[in-house]
Image 1 (cartoon, rainbow, N blue to C red):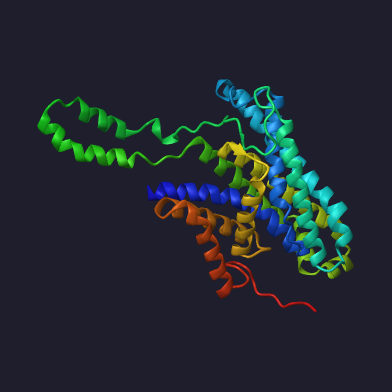
Image 2: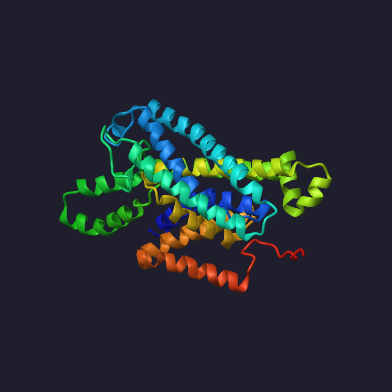
Length: 350
């Protein structure tokens, strides 16, 4: 079961990493902690829920739809929701953050908190606007998300364990039963390891997204412009780089990743609420700081570490202590390595 808990932690950690990349990219370019990013993720889950509602898929009918319709619904969500989140993120940058570029750092930080509260209240009204099975729901209630991805174990289909158990049961001799009881129990224990289609979905979405982002930043012209802007915006302007466009592209990519994460999270967890962005955004921000904020591999590493700590802490200690463990580890890391696990020390420019 240890490996099962590790798999669960790895999957949750990947979801945190997708959200953390939005934090770390924006901070790496403009040194802004975009606290509204978690609530942007929340709005993405409501957009996905709205799309399913428009397609006639609800909690009660999710189990009756065909595989092709489920695949079409996932494809539509994976296209529309990232576009929605990316557009909203760029609009917020243009309207709220860009006028405050040269302001003291506290001004955009407070503005980000204000945008976060605005998004949260939009989610509160949106929750009530989407009907569930033809009826309205309370605005502050937690919403069930249609379960259109199977939770079956991929490893069950050709399992030699089941054949061993069946053979043991067919032997009617008492002595044979006694002699085979322990191996059979052991076989059953070994067969408890599960890799579900939902786990495979998370892996199939997050790993290519992270590889694509790494390739984009390292090897494309826009990625080079991003790195130049992050290193020295003034020098980047002197070299002819449109810094405002680079920053807008960063918000675009961060918002799109948040949209992909919101769809994947909703399909995996099958629940959402107007407050879901606060908790997951907090863990994602912690992951970004833990790995080294502004560092893309660090955000991924931090997300995976937090996912593993939460999963193993819940399994072997107690669920209510997991948050304390996560932030205790964060404090210890920052005490002995203030730049995070993969962050590099830089001189403060004055």
